[in-house]
Length: 71
Ligand code: FES
Image 1 (tube, rainbow, N blue to C red):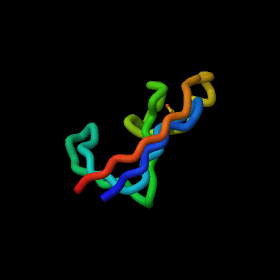
Image 2 (cartoon, helix red, strand yellow):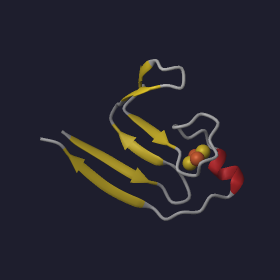
Image 3 (cartoon, protein in one colour):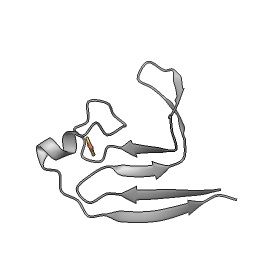
Image 4 (cartoon, rainbow, N blue to C red):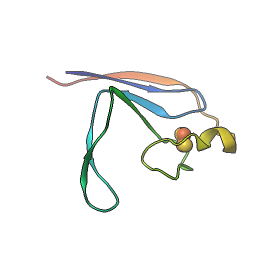
């Protein structure tokens, strides 16, 4: 299995695929769709997901791309 992870310039970390996580209420959740965006600016009101706030606060960071392969 291969997972593509891309940190957008001045934006969130985009992950291709789905993930299961525990929300703030302790409930197990699964991401929807084929891609999700994780906040890396720290300002999202919907952590760990990006809610677009990085644009309002002028977040700056370089783009990064990596591939994770699990056998
Ligand atoms: S990266 Fe988008 S809200 Fe933080």
